[in-house]
Length: 145
Image (cartoon, rainbow, N blue to C red; front, side):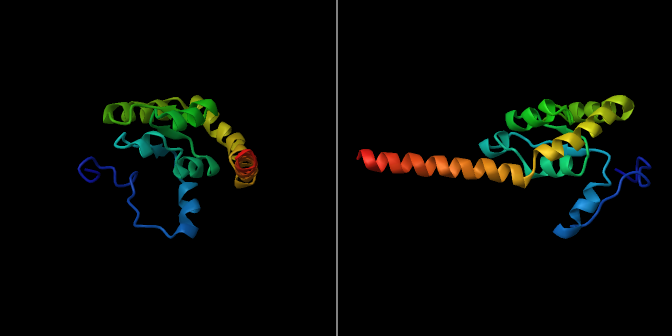
């Protein structure tokens, strides 16, 4: 289809990339896609690593409207959410960002702010707090028994 439409200069297909090289490829992207299909609860409830990789690489996203992904994309204003089951809706989202460079630049700028928010160092604190809370709750329950 790329050849038929004469898009070979604009569309590149790349073989599997080693993990240590992935960030350099991601940073070159104009848009990231987080368009999962609702085929299972795991997809619907996901807060995907790929989304945060795009944010970290300062790449605005076109994403599905699933709750956890939408919360990040719209909450941090780093892209737009579309009906991921509808190819036309995805195309409309892409074209919107291609045609609205001011909005695209706002999303790009917002990724710079959001990437400071979503770091392992900050998430580690939350996770450790959660584990401490569980541990305290478990101790209290044993004492009561």
